[in-house]
Length: 208
Image (tube, rainbow, N blue to C red):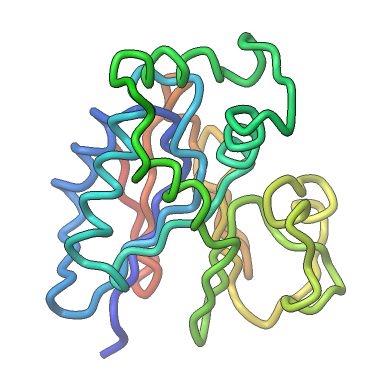
């Protein structure tokens, strides 16, 4: 029997939904099952700090069983707090993230390392997990960080076969975007939609 893998869509500060989802998915890391987060833990929602803290707890306990990918919002936030990019506080919901961290100041070193260490993709024998998608016609090793984190229409509108199913977030849908070779799991949790998880072996969707 194939090892189960659970992939979680964009959380955006919705810690309550994350906790409910973790209670529901029956993830068993002691059986070598993986939990893959597709990025965008922060911004727009009320508890970005709490989401990152919870993911860090899972990662500290289960290490290689928890895969944490970078989203474009993590990229923007790191650029903002390190002074590499000036972002209006009203842009992309970063004001919510700053408010969350101000309640828990000073800024935790563990969180900064978390943002710095996020992976761009995760690959198994049958799936590629990434935040935004992949550029059609480009080998995985030659994809750019910009495309991993930001690509949208060129990926979504292409029927290109990457040889594996690409599981991604980034683009919100009212329902999961499921097509041959594609599985989009951002269902707008922070906009009132559910937080979605895919159990990739069985193709089972779990929502809260």
